[in-house]
Length: 401
Image 1 (tube, rainbow, N blue to C red):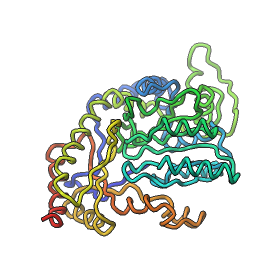
Image 2: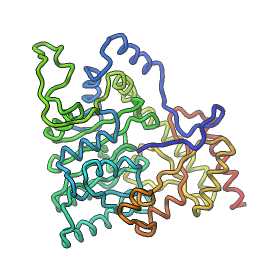
Image 3: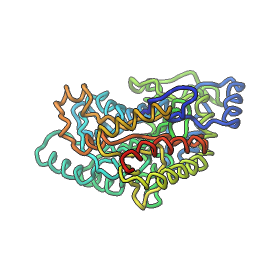
Image 4: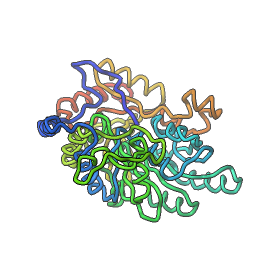
């Protein structure tokens, strides 16, 4: 999933900025001086440490979350005509990787509180498709919107019941947990993977990058090979003891590998992940406190058993007219903001291809019309947070005054 600010001027409060310090710069410089810039030992170390951080078994570093999801779907056996179940309330990448493989994205509406996929509706749809013989149901693809994890215990139980794989879009969800269980911890009896984003605006960054984490060695091996042209081995191993120039192409793969330059940045960001999350939590708590005074503002609804990654802070207002008014007001005040997300069924490709109407997914359509994402990034200053609060409060005060 991607995020773009609606304000991008030098004197504005930006919607998002990466939190880069001298340690990151030094690590990247050291990698430059090593003369190994592409996929190599730093990328492998990043994989090992990230897997440890999320209690995962195998990790494959790639150049985007989009790449990770594409590789994961391919590795679990998605083929043309298969059905993949996901929410329309997500960025384009989640569904487009389904289409890359010729499979069909089956949208399921969202729950209004978390904006995540409605698991009750998902269960109903899976059973209806089974009874109708609608096609080969292959994968459940939950998206952890804003950094609030879906109830994965329920998802895994559905996967077991209907013999499905699970590919999680965790682009927003590092580090997040539910009932003390980190996103990335997947049971071994469920086939699948968890896919992360390290885009410039995400909770940790490699500038561009992603990670696939899986308990399944075969899924990891397939994803690793397909991430670099279907090669039978990693390119840098030829320089190790006993290395050889010989290789084999096991399948026509892709060019999805993560460079050591990017991994060097990620290694330091990973060490700082908890520190940066704590800063976002403080910003979210301050927003919650200040905006609670206004009856026309709805702050994010995070379940009590969830520790959100706070990638996004989604404020909701009464309707689309109010949303557009607030966005315009924030633009005038030079406050970066965004809207997450324009639901996929409202985009021309999905509308024209599948005949979707706004009312087909009423909750996603309604909540999109009410949502504004405010700046929440660990490099924000206290003054910037105060500017956001003042700008939103001055707008809301017109209605509550």
